Length: 329
Image (cartoon, rainbow, N blue to C red; front, side, top):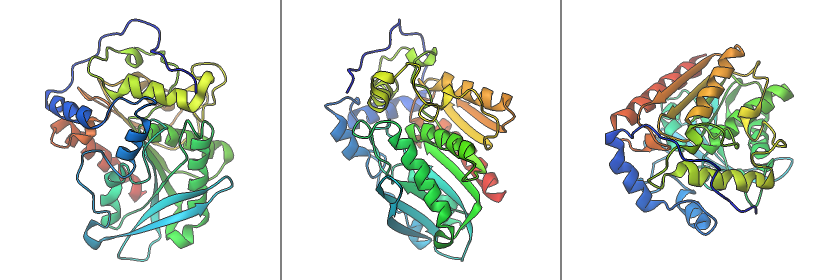
C-alpha cells in the first residue's frame, strides 16, 4: 500500500468547536486511536458493531422491529446484510438502504444503523445495511460496486423484503455518505434502480485535499485529516489525488450532476469535509437537483454522536424531519 503523507501546505485556521462538544471529543479520542496501519485492526474491532463507547442498541426496539441477518449473493461476492422491518403490518414499505462509515477501511453493517431505527419502529420504512468489502484488502472499485450490487439485490427481492421498489432512499454516513453519493451516480448512469432521495451525512466525497477545510489546523488528533487521508490512500493507492479516479469513488469529481435524486447533506463547520460538502450541494442545486444543506456551527466529524449537545440534537432533528418527509412521498 502507498505510504501516507500529510497533504502539502501550511495548515489553515478552523472555526472553534461548539463548547458543549469539547468534552465529548476528548472522550472519543481516549476510545478510538488515530487511524493508521498499526491501529487498523483495533479500529475495525471497535467499529464493527456500533459506535465505540456507546451502550448496545436494541435493534428490535422492544419488539417493534424484526431483525433479519442475511447473506446475499451478488455478481462478485457473498456478502452479509442486515434488514430491519416493522413487526406489525404487511407492507410494502419504502426502503432506506444505509451504507456505514469507517473511512472505507473499517466499520460494519450495524455501525450507525440506530440512526434510522425509529423509522422502522414506527412502521414507515424497511432499513437494509450491507457489509461491503473494505480497503486496503479490497480497493476501489470494490466498495462502491458492492454497495450498488447490494442495493440492486434489495430491489430485485422487493417481494421477499416487503419493500416498495418505487420508493427507495440511499443513505450513508462519512465514508458511507460518499459511497451513497457514488451509488446514486451509478444508479442514474445505469438507469436502475430508481432512487427517490439520497441522504449524505458528513460525506467523504473528495480525495484531492484541494479545499481550505481539508487542510485546516488539526491540533487535537481529530479523525478528519489523519483518518481520511489513510482511508483515501487505502482505497485508491497511487491514484489518490491524480487524474485517474472515478467519480463513483470520489463523487465531487463528477461534472454532470443532473438527473440525481433530491439530496440531504449535512456537515460540521469545523470538520475537514466542510468545503467539499458545500461545493457538492451547490453544484447539485445548480444542476436542478432539490437540495437540503445544513452546516452545523462548531461541529467536528462525528459530532452528532455527542447526543447531550444541543447542536447534535438539532442536527438529528433536522435529518429525521427530512427522512419523514422523504418517506411520505
